Length: 385
Image 1 (cartoon, rainbow, N blue to C red):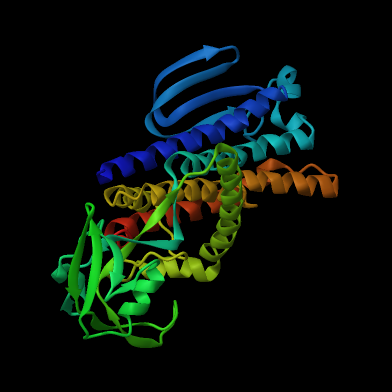
Image 2 (tube, rainbow, N blue to C red):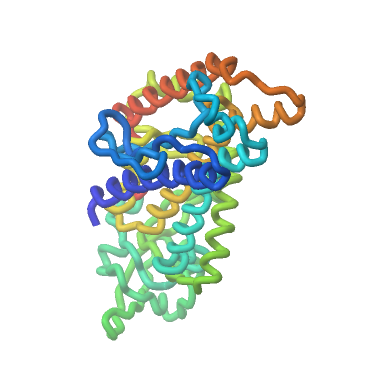
C-alpha cells in the first residue's frame, strides 16, 4: 500500500468529520424548530446550489470542510420580526446547548465507529504476547552486521529451540541470547514445514536497563523482531472497546490540548521555528494538517493499518475536544456564554464577544501558519521506519 492512500484517507476523514460536525448542528437545530438558512460543502466560490424548503444546499470550490448557517447565530444579522421566534437566541438554553454540543458529539460517534471497525474487521495486534515467529531481521546490530541475517534466518521462520533448549515464548529466546554475546548458538527454526539448524553468534550491544532509563547494560543480540497475534473481536466486544478507546482518547486529548496550548507549549512551537532538521514525534509535538497527512501516508507505506486508523480516530476526537474549548467563536465559547447567562440570569450581548472571537481566530491563524511552516520545513521523523 503506498503513501498516497493514507494521505487520501486523511483528507477524506477531514472532510467527513467537518460535514458530520455541521450535520450535528443542522439536525438538532431543525429538531427544535430553528431556521437553518444554508448547508454547504466546501468554501470559496459557489459551484452548485439548490433549495429544499427554506434551506439552501450546495457545493463550493474548496472542498476542505463545510458549514451550516443557523438563523440568529450571527450577532450582526438583521432578522425580520416575524422570524425572531425561530432564531437560535429565541430558544431555551438547554436546546441551544444541545445544538452547540451536537457538533463535537458527532466526532465522538465517528471515533467510536472507526475504533469499533478496527477491533471487529481489521483487528489489532496483541503486543503483550510476542510470538516466536520472526517478523523482521535487521541488517545491523550496532556497528556489526546482523547475526541472524548472516546465519540465514528469514521473516516467517519459527524459532523452535536454541542449542537444544526449547523456545516456547519470546522471553525464552531473550533469556538464551542476552547472556551469550560472542558465543555460537544453534538456532533450530521451522520454515515451510522443514527444520533447519542455523549457527548464530550474538553480538554485544548496549541497551537501556529499563524503558526510558539512561542506564544501559551490555547484552547479546542477534537482530530479530517478533511477530504478534492479530486479534479480532465480536461486534459487541468491538463496540464496547471502541467506546472505551474513545473515552480514553477524550481524556488524552484534554490533557494534550492543555499542554500544547499552555504558555510553555505555545512558546515551544515558536522556538521550533528557529531550529533545523527533522523533529522527533512526541506526545507534546503538535502537527498541522500537512504533518497529519504525511503521517497517515507513512503509516500506509509501512502497511500499518492499525496505526493509521488509531491516528485518524484520535485526530477526530482531538478536534472535537478543541472545539469545546471555552473560547469564542468555538462552540465551547458559546456554551460558556450560555452558562454565564444561566448563572447570572442576564442575557450577554453577543456583539461584545466579537473582539474576543477576533483575537482567538487571529491566534489560531498564526498557530496554523506556524505549523504549516514546520510541517514543510521541519517535518517529523517517520515513526514507521
